[in-house]
Image (cartoon, rainbow, N blue to C red; front, top):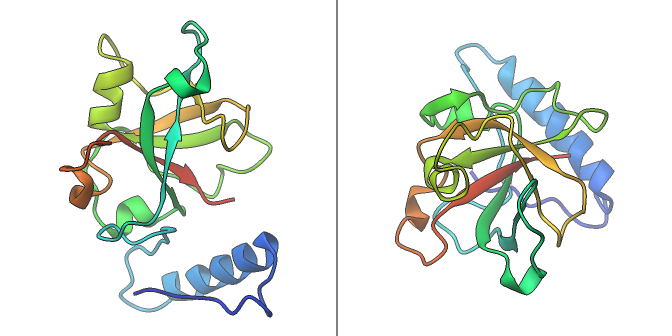
Length: 162
């Protein structure tokens, strides 16, 4: 389901986050609901963004020389709701909040690209167009967006909605 909030009523990020958090809380409380979550752009659309990524601990490169990843913003519960296969670690939880390291979930293809010799979980990366703050990988999934497998920017990561 796609949901568009009227900008006049929900004009700040905080307003939208509060609305979506409360909506998810109510949906999860419904009988028979096993999981519920949100994503910023539906998987079969052209939404989301492409971001340059820097891997913490590797030599610093100019942003124009950094590899790019397709990025989606998801909520806690999204990985479970769409039944993504978690290969290692976990999806987002409500504990992934601003006072903790920023969390990311990466696809297996992204993990192979950036950490071919070991586990991606616990590693850190920076999305310089968004923030210089490092983000820690908390989970590895088989794929985030099957519809993007054929695009030129295959590796994916998801950011927790703030």
